[in-house]
Length: 256
Image (cartoon, rainbow, N blue to C red; front, side):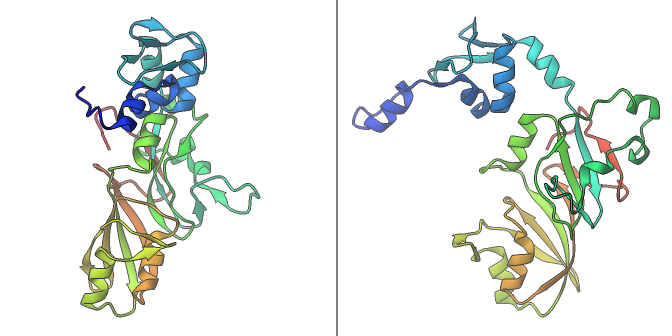
């Protein structure tokens, strides 16, 4: 790697050792928590040598890899697509005031899969990869795979999320352009969004970020009220014909 010798910061960053778990996460190979588990099992190598201690550090230019045992574990991890109904929250509620979406992941609610296959599945460790508020419906991803969680909800996630949003109020051309780019929430500018009319009372939003109740708050800023919000796509995976309240497994040939 050619580095300008005048750029001392770049030199320091290259020469600095970093925790192997962090490097694995940065490479998209697993989450940091998963990395620690793999290290404990002897399933991580640096330049071909097995890492034996948690907290081991390496240089960024070194070759960090997962051994076959870790890859087999990853292949067994579930990712589930749920059509969340209104009235359920995406994450667990510490005070147990509302029903979590994960409570719908039962054999009875599974879509198009034999019951005997369902009984062999292990749902422990499923966590929502992103939020969908209690008043919204549509596609929610729950996964055991840290790679997918990082891809979907990482700060710099490249994954688009598409919504159909029913609104009341009058939207001017200036307001529409503001929804597309120029609004600020919590003192921070929003990334550009694709916003267009789907029909006379419904807007189509495509976002690359997911701040808390973002679409509802965006609409409030241009004098619109959201009366219905449904997520219909995450990346390349559509909600499709999945019925409300039912779920299915992400197939091996599907990619976000």
